[in-house]
Amino acid sequence: MEKYTDQFMSMALQYAPKILLAVVTLIVGLKIITWLTGLLQKVLRNRHVDESIIPFLGSILSVLLKVVLLITVAGMFGIETTSFVALIGGAGLAVGLALQGSLGHFASGVLVLIFKPYKVGDLVTVAGFTGEVEEIQVFTTILKTLDNKRIIIPNGSITSGPITNISGQGEIRVDMQFNVAGSESIDKVRKVVNEVANSCPLILKDKPTDVLVNCLETGTIKFDVRPWCKSASYWDVYYFMQENIKRQFDAQGVQAPTPAMNINLAK
Image (cartoon, rainbow, N blue to C red):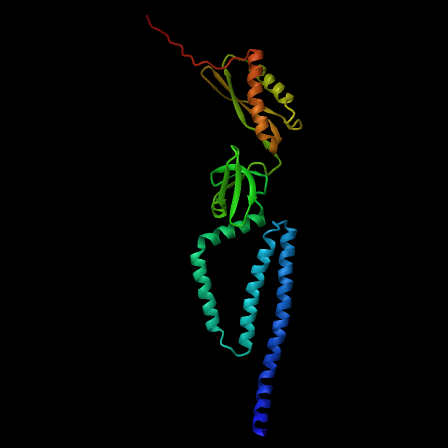
């Protein structure tokens, strides 16, 4: 008994500090992980990141940190952790290769939700499609096009190309062009266009409506017309101007260009 008692005391004195340190490390580590997870979620909420992704990112961070903590504690007990690290690394590599496309879309979705190049309700052009953002998910963004089609675009395709947020600034300029006969008075055409613009309640009155001569061609004067409006009213203003400028041109006798050619015959 004395022999076994001495061996037990010897082992206790040898391993007790390691066990105590490992337990303290585990308890303190779990508290730090909880604090870091809460801090991440708080930062994401302060940046107005989509609420649906915040718990998901917090869970990923918590799991990763806990795996690292457990490996560290196991090493403090004297357990060889190299094989565990290699196994976890190999499994992670295999999963990453199998899901590399999906993981790329996931990473792109996280970037979109964090940095917010667009939000739900914005009119955007992404991946060659133009439409209103109906929903932003982790893997895809859903657009509703102007002809009421539902387009589901992988987020990886969106972040790999240019993103045009048409309505993100709150106000937008509506660019359009009108052609009149080369014999028409520039001042008269500009007056008619301004009268139509002033009659539209959706056009912003605190910004001037540009009516500019774009170019002069044979028998034609091309005008650029550029009123401003709220982003949500873009198409209403566009179609209002198209219809009512035509009506006013007819009422005021402004002639449309007619293709013509002067031919001189030598005797």
